[in-house]
Image (cartoon, rainbow, N blue to C red; front, top):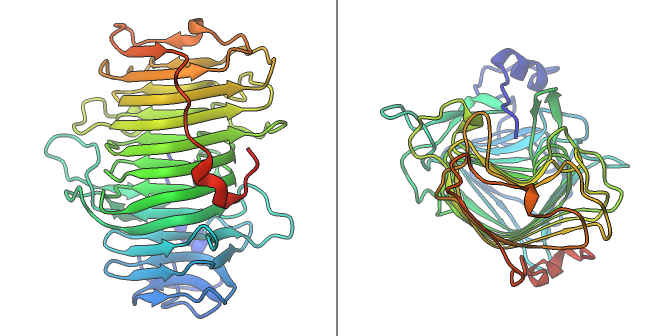
Amino acid sequence: MKLKFLSMLAAAAVVFTGCSSDDDSGSNNTNPTNENLAGNMTESRTLDADVEYKLTGALIVKDGVTLTIPAGTTIEAIAGGTGVYLLVERGGKIIAEGTADSPITFTSDAATPKAGDWGGVIINGRAPISRQAGAVNEAATEINTAVLFGGDNATDNSGILNYVVIEYTGARIDDDAEHNGLTLNGVGSGTTLSNIMIKNGDDDAIEFFGGTVNASNILVVNCTDDMFDFSQGYTGTVTNIYGIREAGYTAVTSDPRGVEADGNLDGVSPTDINQSNFTINGMTIINKGAFTAPTMVDVIKIRRGATAKITNTYVEFGSGVSVTGVDMIDLKDAAGDANDATTISFTRNAANSLGTTAIKNTTSGGATVTENTTQTGATTAPFAWTNYAF
């Protein structure tokens, strides 16, 4: 995860090409037309699964408005635009409830789609985030700083994502600013996130910035940076998550990880209250190719005041690969170690050279890291609907 700032001037340059507007959300249309989706949604709307929709710009679901996407709907984003994304504001809702037989798909419209073709899906909520004591419980959305997230409602409900595919996301704004596949900003536990596949994306696949939302059955395939990223006071539970880099996949950033977790935003505010304290139950991280840095610098990196409780984790590398320059678990960081209350239990495939020397405890040695042979990781049965060949 990288700190991403986008000035209002840059936002205008990206979004207002060829048009003008005085709204503050970076989009110029009101209530998008049937086939083309872009602009501010100020009235609730239900899409039609029989229509092939084009996401042609930033689609902003405003406070008090619900976007309902029925099972089987496909939304194709025009390729090449950092200003092409779906953003649900605080108080808005997305009801994207697919089925195993008829999932909902967000994809690229390119003839030859690739990672970074469009932005991604961003959901903002009113749940707590990390902050200084006495400070307002909110922050600016990284890709659109005019839009805020966070609040005091831990059970806030931003809607449903169920049986959803998100692919070819992560459009790059500049060297330090990119979209993720699915970004969750201060999302509350009243929101449902389950049965989601995120594949072939630039930057992180899924990132939690604060919030309390729980998630289950998340499959990540071939992201360039972190598979699962937690920051800014995330305090929920994720269950049955599976991340994989396929054989031959080398399109990565300088510091890709399976899990990356910060207690506060990028470690810049170590005295924050409500820092990340989350749970992972059932996780598999697999790299089928040459498992050398920088293909993955850490399998699990917990740092900067974060507390993680990670159980039933299975890690596997390419058969017979000699692993060099890679940490299995790293709990140390120059901007602050993981909280000593962190506990991790895991099993690794032993057919490589990644041993216990690749485990770095906190400076005090207070965290609990346990390796055994009984961890099986995430089960693949819930991902049958994706037709992915594990």
